Amino acid sequence: MGSFYTQILVRESNEARCAEVMHTFRRSSVIIPAHKGITVVCDKLSEDQSFDTLDSVAMTLSHKLNTPTVALLNNDDDWLGFRFFDKGEFVGSLLIGHTIFSLNGSINMLKRFINPNASTIKLYLVFIKPYLFQFRRHRDIAQILDLPARSVGMGYKYITTDDHPEDYDKSDFIKT
Image 1: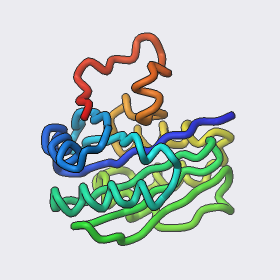
Image 2: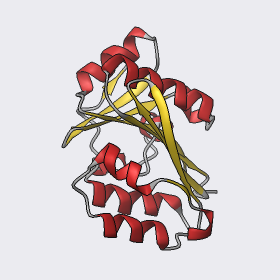
Image 3: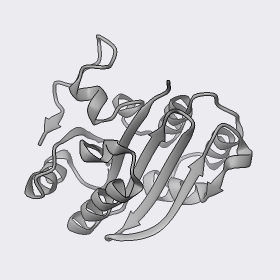
Image 4: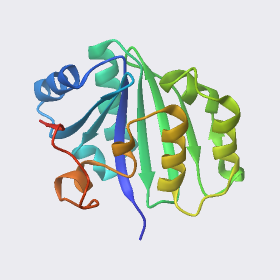
């Protein structure tokens, strides 16, 4: 059995503002502090692996914070999905399975939404390379886009049930 987790990547916001929105909407969540302008929100209800639920949270954060967000879903390590929102509007998606033949969507949009200065070639190579486990692709994408390392392979359930390495530091995470 593979990994199941969801995240919302919030650009140009900090953890306090994200926590305020999540608290206002009475959402149970864990917020991983911003790293180079990206805050990671792990929402409890989004762990149901429904794009409808995940999209709703990403769209709300994007609208309320007036900033781009990316909803990320890893489904059983078979599929890694990204859904893009700008100012509360859905603007595109990217989905990848084990091989390049399953790729559907815009790699350039992922780069533009997270880190426009990242290496385009390196990012494309991560999507061309076959991966048996999508959390490994997520790890490599995170490294190229300079996402918080502590977000790789993590979702609400893994963080709150301590299903992570012993040395995993979550002392500065915010829970709502």
